[in-house]
Amino acid sequence: MSSLSVGSIVEGVVTGITNFGAFILLPNGETGLVHISEVADSYVKDIHEHLQKKDKVKVKILSVNGDGKVGLSIRRALNDGKGNPAPRRSGGGRVTGGSGVISFEDKLARFIKESDEKQQDLKKNTDAKRGGGRSYRHYDREFF
Image (cartoon, rainbow, N blue to C red; front, side, top):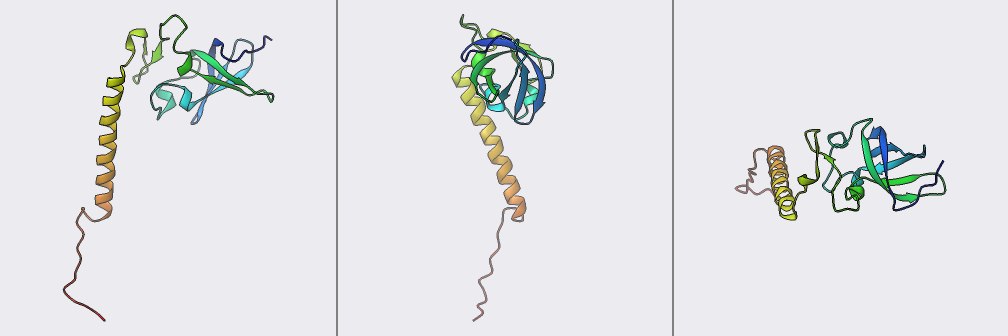
């Protein structure tokens, strides 16, 4: 078994997926964990939209603890050192090449749109709990 060096980028295979991340089998036979926050540059609600079991992925080694735990990142390995983003899985499950890079403005526009939609959903849910958004207060009688 070769030792893992922090900062290196290697190719591994997804062996398991949980709600908090994915387990990756590394070339030296060890298994590491990619936390859900290290899967993509954007917010990952459902990890299955980005990874499936047996997917081959490039990962950057973030940490190797004395207890054998290996911390990995897919999003930090997206750039292969030559300025070319590694292929990523899009929301539809298809892999897109390096030309699928999203600009900051596009990310911001998507964030604002999603935020507005969530805000509207929250308002609808809150209004429904309050009885349609109207509150009736009866102050015409006083009881002392």
